[in-house]
Length: 447
Image 1 (tube, one colour):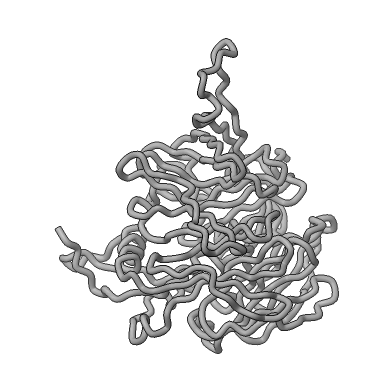
Image 2 (cartoon, rainbow, N blue to C red):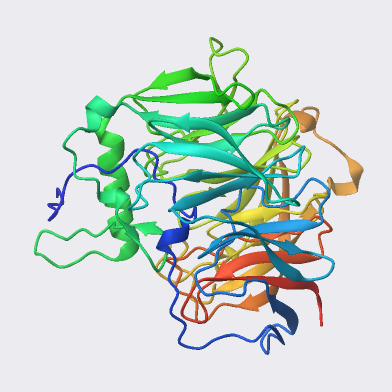
């Protein structure tokens, strides 16, 4: 039966879920957290990095650390601040009076990139991208972006990458996803069932994503030269293009996704921006109905692309890897409660992390609201005897897990987005366990 919705218009194409806009953060705390404590459930030490409610760390696949690994940048209600990982002191980098979005730090220089927005914080309007030196606070203009949005920077900081929706195609469209919920930095996904009952948050999100996918709005991916500000298009499509990620080591290798309900789209793609006429490479091919793959990210050395894989959706859970150079594949199995909105990997590749999920999400986990550390284990050949084509097959394995933080009080409309510190000893995440968004770090070793 076809679902009839109260609102059936389209939303904006970029849909930067989980990326904090400074003006949109929830700043009211009902139960302020201490600066440091030991989680009574997990026995791991947690420190609060941020000083003010409404502060936020970056989305899980955006780099927030300096190349030297000494500082982490976060957004605050007043601007951008840097946390010294050795002294554990937070200091302002730059105050920004107008609405802005913290983008990322560079892989090569000690630059922090951000873009200013319109007076209402509207992500669909014109923007200006700046870079600010994390030590001096001196900012310089990189480029004006009349349309579209910046999503990534390449390994040598010569190119910014972004997506653009054809302005003519969206004229007069109700911008459902331009409306942000200040508490969670998520779009306003609300939709109703035919009898007028409101859908759950997860169901509404699926409906809105499908509406956008079916609209087939013309889009393009572009890059901007950070030295000249010159912009050029590298791909055009009516697919919903999103989640651009440059390789952290190859300046011309760009990963992107076809957005939409994951069981309908072939999501994961790889292309070279120095060879835009070459066909993109599809990274995962579905082999069963309702199989889904997504929330992809590059390993720190750029050699592997990891992603959430479910075979089928909501039933069997994996973190899968694709080796860029060889095409070799790895799959690590995990349990329902361990499924996470976003996974991540440590700088040395020896550990993974997860930020859990509530019972409404895709895994319907009855007890999944934790920050996790995962140790991967490969499954060896019996008696050391290999199949003749063993190297061409998927290399299987499994995770063993450790709970790092209880997020029983977390409203998962705000996704925690865990990232390892450069030394691999802490996991940084954002949470609303105090009633407002703050930035925390949990020590991997037990207190």
